[in-house]
Amino acid sequence: MSRENNFDIVRLSLAFLVVFFHIGYLSGNPLFANLPRYFSGHLAVEGFFAISGFLIFASYERSSSLKDYYIKRAARILPGYWLSTAVCLFIAFSYGSFHIARFLFANLTFANFLGGDIPGVFASNPMTAMNGALWTIKIEIMFYILVPVIVWLSRRINRDAVLWSLFALSILYRVLMADHNTYALQLPGQLSFFMIGALIHYHVRFFETNGKWITFAAVILYAAHLATGWFVLRPAAVATLTLSVSLLAPTVKGPTRWGDFSYGTYVLHWPVIQLFVAAGLYRDHPWAAMALTVISIALAATFSWFVVEKPSLALAHSRRIKNRYPAVTPS
Image 1 (cartoon, rainbow, N blue to C red):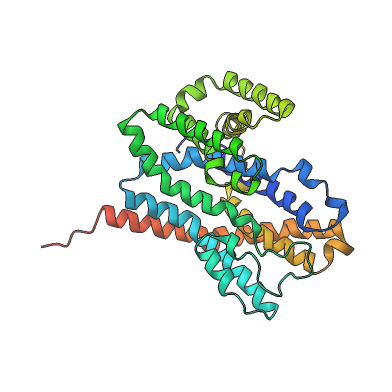
Image 2 (tube, helix red, strand yellow):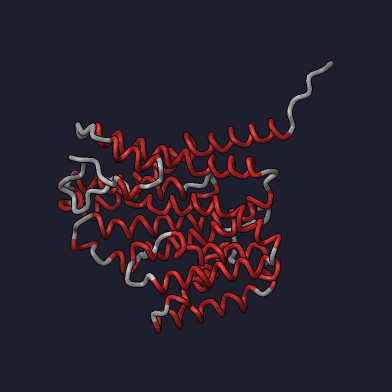
């Protein structure tokens, strides 16, 4: 997008929301047991998916071909993901554990649920998973695969009818799976947030023109969700409010003026927290442990962006341009 927006700072804020959410769950210190109540990881993930719906449909519409689209998507998500996997393997080797085959297969196929642990690593921690935050990446990958199909259907039927139908079917699935939380949180259940992002992308001018009233309606909708507990009210409210801040609020750059550190923060924070838990810092010096965790995650995300993600994106961009405009050999 060429217009000024808050996507980077909102995503970074959501990523750190997840960080504090997981500190509460992973640290094992009662001092931080209430963090998940105030820093909702589920809300953050839903916000991520809403932003993805907006940006990924925009990316596909701007792509010159299906190949061009998938090259962009792969360049954005794979290098940081591979880095997080490599970090986990390095930790395992430092523990003297080389039973990594199952973990490596599960991570390289995005089926993290098949091998979340490595034997002997983080065995004394309250949770032993190497990187439990990566469960959302497979959903993101499936979104990438689905977008061309959804656009194809939209162009042959009716775009809004297709997007709203998928939104409604997603909510229906989520309601039917209410007693099976593991399944409810997977792709069909998260698609509703993604679809609101897509709808706002396709109606962005209307959204910007009427943003004040749409945002007010979303606040009322979210308040109604909190009062009733009805999930059916949540996706439109959360997704709309996330995109309202991203598109309508005054632009805030903060640290994102130097780069997009949100993805590195998200994929690397879990093993960093686990290392400090394993070292006993959350038991003996909890506040110092939290401060060191945040600093370490920020440094890791900075490394990920400047050393891995940004160069990979630049390389993919240069190859796409080269393929689109091949050099002409003089005759």
